Length: 141
Image (cartoon, rainbow, N blue to C red):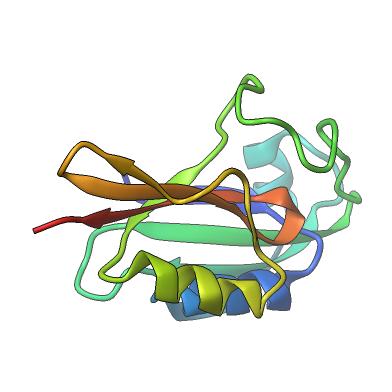
């Protein structure tokens, strides 16, 4: 897998949120033209993208802000976790409480609470910008 794409309304807020999670901005670009229209099946595509990468890792996120055609809502702004479709991206973290506190400065909220899974992990879901849910997992020693 090369990347996961997420459509957002506030590109800069989404970039800041994922930077706080430890990702790095690989680059930004404006996407438009016939090739873009044909690829995504829309006419008149014009969007800004930001490619975020995990340092020293294989994973990337492509954040896209559509200017034309305008993005449309896929449903409720804060859908529950059991909504059909892709619903989260998970990150391994060293200190889950610290990460949650830092993400809160970017408007993130816990979906539930930090929970312990046996003697293996601390886990939680955090809702960030655009209602994006990220899972955090801290492996216990």
